[in-house]
Every structure is written in structure tokens, then in C-alpha cells.
Amino acid sequence: MADQPSPPRTDVHSPERRSFNMSRIRGRDTKPEMLIRRGLHARGFRFRLHDPRLPGRPDMVLPARQSVILIHGCFWHGHDCPMFRLPATREEFWRSKIEANRARDVLANEALAAAGWRRLTVWECALRGRARLAAEDALDVCERFLRGSDEAREVRGQWERLESRL
Ligand SMILES: [Zn+2]
Image 1 (spheres, helix red, strand yellow):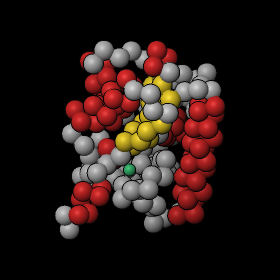
Image 2 (tube, rainbow, N blue to C red):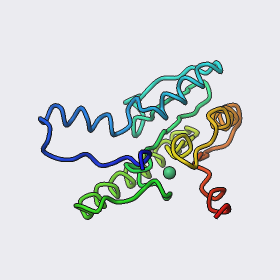
Image 3 (spheres, rainbow, N blue to C red):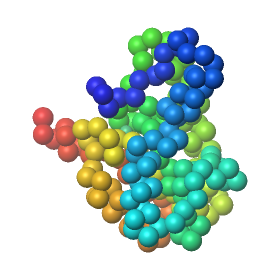
Image 4 (cartoon, rainbow, N blue to C red):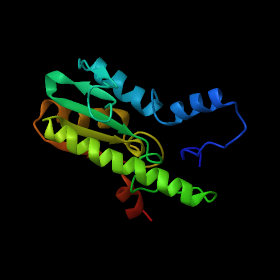
């Protein structure tokens, strides 16, 4: 299951090294995010990254479109999809950690909505793993959202399509 993010093992790295790894795993500059960034940039969109002035530091901010794009790892954000599975070890630790992340996402989303930001959430499984969309299709969805006027929208892996094949 190469596509499944695995939680970090503990105590094999120095604290510095570990926090570096954690920041990587937490989804800054990850592959799905780079794919969306490069693709939308190529389509002419301009954006700010990880703006600390906005609730939850959205991954991408497009003021001209009054929009933010949130690119969520399915593990860290507890997505309701097959790419999210709690590790067998320290299950309670991970459960409370992921639940805290989800609660934070809900609050950030509400605060962004209250401030008038349109929100596009792109889940990792839309871009990686066996249920992923073709990259251009995922970018089409993003572009339609940005040019449109929907308040909120989510892009996720096409799990239903996989299931209907069984
Ligand atoms: Zn997912």
C-alpha cells in the first residue's frame, strides 16, 4: 500500500529531524499540492501560499477569486475514504490526534466562510492512489470552481466507481 501515508515511527530520529519529517508529512509542499499549484499556475491563476493571516493557513489563497484551496491529506485530516485507516499501534493516540485535526478543520472552514471566502477542498485521494482522477480532470474541477460562484466544493477520489466494478 505505497499510497497509504504511514504514521511516523518514533524515536529513531533526533527531535530536529523528526520535526522536519513531521512538517513534510503534514502536507506542506507535498506532491498533490505541487500538482495543483503547477497546474493552476500554468492555467494563469495566481495565488499566495499558506497565508498565516487567514484561519487555518489555507494552502492556496486567490484573493481575485475570493477563494481558498485546501489540499488535505486523507490520513491527517481523517477523510471518510479507504485511504484513511488508523494505525494498529497506539490507536487511541492517533484517533484523538486526527479528531483534533478534524475539529480544527471545521472551525477554520466556518471562519473562512464567515469572512466570505469560497472554499475548495481537494482531498489527497483525488490526486493519488487507485481512485485518483486524471490530473487534468482534477484541474478542470478546480478551474470551474475558481471561475464560478459556488460557496464550497470538495474534490475526492472516485471510490464509488471502483466499488461498482467489484
Ligand atoms: Zn480520501
